[in-house]
Length: 104
Image (cartoon, rainbow, N blue to C red; front, side, top):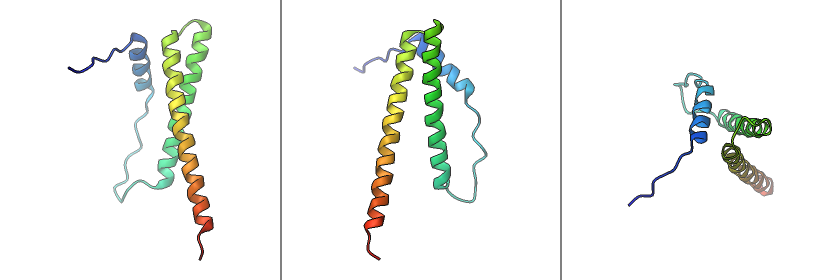
């Protein structure tokens, strides 16, 4: 038997609010794949928006407008995003150092 997933009302409201704020992506280019700089820009933008959402959830909790569970969920999402960003940064630095060590 599969384990049913329990979703809180705060999580549903948070997801709905986040979905409302999503802006449509710019028209896809048909001439080829997305460039590396576009991918990095999108990832950085996503990380920044996650940080802003967690910050606004914490501020809302201080004002008494947001529940504790929503703050915890936003904080956990921010933590996961930060771990991924640090991991990617470490890989980029490692690749850069490997390139510098290459003999020409």
